[in-house]
Amino acid sequence: MLGFTYLLLTFWMSAQMSFAAPFAQFEAGCNNFASQVANSVANTTVFFAEVVPAGTNLTFPDQDPSCASTSSSQVVLADMCRVALNVSTSNDSGIIMEAWLPKNWTGRFLSTGNGGLGGCIQYVDLAYTTALGFATVGANNGHNGTSGASFYHNPEVLADFVYRSVHTSAVVGKEITRLFYGTPHNTSYYLGCSTGGRQGFKSMQDFPDDFDGIVAGAPGINWNSLMSWEDYVHSVLGNNSSPTFITNGEWLDLVHKNVMKQCDAIDGAVDGIIEDPNLCNYRPEDLLCGSSSSNSPDCLTAEQVHALRLVYSPLYNSNGHLMYPRQQPGSEDPSYIDEIFGGQLVQFSADWFRYVVYDPSSDLNTLNVTDWTHTQQLNPYNIGTWNGNLSAFRNNGGKMLTYQGQADMVVSPIDMELYYAHVQRTMSLQSKEVDDFMRLFRISGMSHCANGPGAWEIGQTLPGVGGQLTVEMLHPDRNVLTAMVKWVEGEVAPETIQGTKYVNDTKDLGVQFSRRHCRYPLRNTYDGVGDSRDPDSWFCQ
Ligand SMILES: *[C@@H]1O[C@H](CO)[C@@H](O)[C@H](O)[C@H]1NC(C)=O
Ligand SMILES: *[C@@H]1O[C@H](CO)[C@@H](O)[C@H](O)[C@H]1NC(C)=O
Ligand SMILES: *[C@@H]1O[C@H](CO)[C@@H](O)[C@H](O)[C@H]1NC(C)=O
Ligand SMILES: *[C@@H]1O[C@H](CO)[C@@H](O)[C@H](O)[C@H]1NC(C)=O
Ligand SMILES: *[C@@H]1O[C@H](CO)[C@@H](O)[C@H](O)[C@H]1NC(C)=O
Ligand SMILES: *[C@@H]1O[C@H](CO)[C@@H](O)[C@H](O)[C@H]1NC(C)=O
Ligand SMILES: *[C@@H]1O[C@H](CO)[C@@H](O)[C@H](O)[C@H]1NC(C)=O
Ligand SMILES: *[C@@H]1O[C@H](CO)[C@@H](O)[C@H](O)[C@H]1NC(C)=O
Ligand SMILES: *[C@@H]1O[C@H](CO)[C@@H](O)[C@H](O)[C@H]1NC(C)=O
Ligand SMILES: *[C@@H]1O[C@H](CO)[C@@H](O)[C@H](O)[C@H]1NC(C)=O
Ligand SMILES: *[C@@H]1O[C@H](CO)[C@@H](O)[C@H](O)[C@H]1NC(C)=O
Image (tube, rainbow, N blue to C red):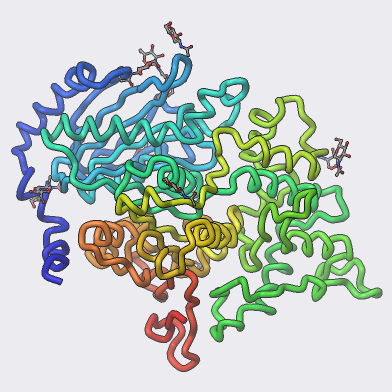
């Protein structure tokens, strides 16, 4: 206990005590740093090293324009030395990376991840973790921009995307950290979601020495099947000239409301959140138009209802094996409906088929289960990221904290539960033994990595603390990243993570409610008595 109290007290202080170099000295060190890196780290070209004072609003004029949706500008929250470089990863591939080295360093190192097919450095994550005193790196995943076009006939660029960008930037980033501060990092961490989540799982599986603690949300593991699932859903729903098509308005006004009508009360609290969607046996037949009402806007045709039935059921391959789990009822997310159910194949899946599985001239409207099975078998560089043997990571003392929104429309929440079971079977472990090194938190009402009707702000990103670094939102009970630091350095693992929901997702409007999320396989259960907005009215069962 003493050790842990010490950790809490020193979480923000330790760096200042050991490393509060005068600003001028820090500045001189940074200004000389580019040549030092170039001379010491093989296969790199340093673009620049420059001091960036807290409060600076950075813009990124050189980045690919498609990255603007990830970050077009970023306000820096702590004084730091910003280093940008490239590192070649083979004769015809390389990564662009940045290291943000805070003046108030805590001795901790952290790598950030990417999203989608993304070749975009997630500057907002660098700003968040640098402000918490981590020496942080981020990389472009081996290519610039959100398109998958550079994978075409380019296996080395694909290898960077699958595993090498994060590994390389971790190795190089640790070396840069040592050079800059004159002493190696004490502990190393990873933070990412979606593709960033998959990158975290890839590190755990294949590079078990890279990180002491990995926080990986909504991971796109089972990747090949996920790509196929997206194509399958597209083929089931068709486009707006198909009798099976369901419009944006129908998804939100009919389907989502009908799901809630059938399943919101299962957990005892009618609050727009299905605590465990596994318990929702959704029946879209409720929405069938009667024989006299076939053109009513309040109902769906038999073709549409059949399509819904398929979307809320798993996909099997031609051998009858489960390929990808169902869409969870309750995950009908206004911010993804047009992209995924809008009548064309979602970009990341389309690019995967065009640039990795087949070629740019493929007709993506005619793929079928043969193609999905082929995709699953192709599995380049083992992008499936489904290795259930985590012995090396566990034996190193590595810790994995994974979180999964239960209203995620992009990655089925069931996928993570299947992986968890796969690890148990592969390693012959009971849940409480898995708890020693890997904990899965199911975040009810959280959409893909963020947002949604639930208490989704769990410290996973800067928006995940309401955009401001406050003592309460950085508390390890409410923050997955500081919880991980406490687990690795204080050896106290998180039992629950308390999520926060702000009114209109705006911190200044105040807290709407909070809820503690349980670790799998425990289920969050309402006591049926207290105010459901009070975390104490729920317990993990
Ligand atoms: C930072 O700069 C960008 C581009 O000039 C601008 O759009 C953005 O509003 C600025 N952010 C802040 C917080 O000032
Ligand atoms: C990728 O973007 C970086 C800036 O982030 C730029 O220096 C580099 O030239 C770009 N590479 C290509 C191939 O466009
Ligand atoms: C760094 O730490 C010092 C000492 O605690 C503090 O006064 C200062 O505000 C910190 N600076 C930044 C940029 O966080
Ligand atoms: C530098 O790159 C070359 C060619 O890709 C490779 O053979 C060599 O091992 C790399 N050196 C280091 C230190 O990574
Ligand atoms: C990489 O380039 C070097 C120098 O041109 C060459 O010797 C080597 O064979 C190349 N390696 C590969 C794998 O192509
Ligand atoms: C890295 O920079 C060097 C020198 O500017 C350049 O030759 C090389 O192509 C760059 N590599 C990448 C991957 O951008
Ligand atoms: C790293 O840990 C050692 C031993 O606990 C401690 O003395 C040192 O101050 C730490 N380094 C930093 C940068 O915090
Ligand atoms: C809609 O789907 C039909 C049937 O697959 C196809 O023939 C048509 O080209 C599609 N329309 C658009 C705009 O994609
Ligand atoms: C899938 O499509 C191909 C032609 O593109 C066809 O030969 C094959 O029979 C189809 N497979 C199934 C299971 O429908
Ligand atoms: C798991 O991997 C370790 C090496 O990390 C190996 O020694 C062990 O045999 C593997 N166990 C299984 C069940 O495959
Ligand atoms: C929250 O947003 C809704 C819809 O945008 C709006 O009607 C409502 O006034 C907002 N509430 C507050 C407290 O700002």
